[in-house]
Image (cartoon, rainbow, N blue to C red):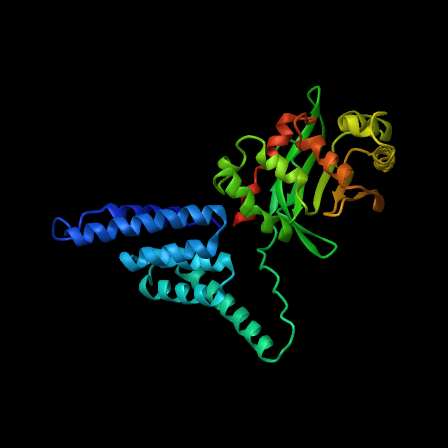
Length: 340
């Protein structure tokens, strides 16, 4: 979760504002400079995904200059870092000193949730019971309308009991004709666990930084987590046309130069596709272990299990030579939500 822009702006202004009553003393100036240094370091660590270390830097900044907004930063960082007790303490203190803040109600509710989770974990430890990590609290799924086909997807869905988060949606067009709308989902928990490393490599967790270059596309294709494409067709497409299109897009993977194992896996994948009619849906999914699954006409078809093939399937849309450069961009429009 990116820290509140208004809080960040307020802190920057507070570090640089003149002292009340006149020119700051040398000691005040030195403390402000130290606080600004710790704050800047904390922001860099937070954007890299090193949340606990970021919280410690924010605490150092607070020690030099006890600005109330820093308590919110401390709470958010410990929350993301998994230290529930310290996050609760910071949220509570922030609410106490900032009773009229717009973040007050949300902070109180979050503190209540974390305190309950922490109490349950401590009780389990005391009883020598195995500690079960509580599932991340998900907001209700919201409708997301793909603008070209006008088809509605959900911001997250459950697949075999696991939440999958929407990264983006777009449309496949051929010669100005719309063929299908497509939504791209990733398995929420493992993708979030790997997101800090992506943000660190990109140099930030905001959308514009993440999508600069092809880093996020490579991360997505090679990522060790489940991926799913939901395709909603707005034209009739024959199974033969689909198989031919995907065979061309797979390139070397489906060519005579590929290994026998890879060729067989590619042909098994292509054989999963039949005719699709206007208004019908088709789902393509791969697991972190490389299992390929296709669902259409209410039927689930288990395809081959091959890590290399599963990577090459997502290369069709996200690789260096995607079937649509516009679609490639829109399919990662929401990638920064993994860091929130």
